Length: 329
Image: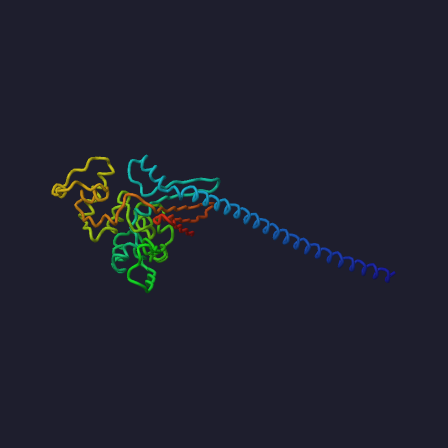
């Protein structure tokens, strides 16, 4: 009897041990299953996020490409149309395009309405140009301005003169500066545009593209003073801007004392006529124009708290070969 009781107790102990072991294994399997499900869920969320981001990137790419193709070749026509509506000179036009959940801030600008840094370097020393640019600019980028021009290539050895029939391959303007990175240290697009695209932002005053001739009709006072002085004095430039404003207003300009002393009739060329009205040096005519062949396009793409900057310049100064420059931040 005592032997059977002992055997029964032993069986109960073994059964309890087996039940406890099964419970531990079951709990371990549940924990493992939960961990696997959490990992799968996280992977699924990550894949969904990546897929959504890829979709947004694709939409942004085609949005930017479509805007660039639709706007860049017709920048001058867009500016002229805006001028006809606004009844004033428009060096730039800004608008916003919304495509689904994405928005695109578009800024079309006349690059020849800005002071060309390469043209300034061709007329003065690097230190003098740097000083003048720092005095003209406002904001924190003025302290970061440091010109880093590339050295011009040495001319090839050969005869001093070339035959009249021999074609030349020299650029219209030596481009020692080819981007904002050679003008400023650590210049972000926000710094260049000053966030709200104000008229005197660095990107609206300076350029390094084009043929170095400034558009007198659209150029700001700051850009005109940088490009024309010297040899023009501040008084000459003030008179020139006043004559320009009278021309744009459609009023008949009053004859100045300087013009009344001229024996010849006023020049037929509108730029030289404005120079004559202002009493400025005729040598300034080679630095100014009333048309433009170089335009830029800023596109600020925004989506889901993210922001990208695209910058494109179409330079048609050389009628035989247009040049396009693109940047992305």
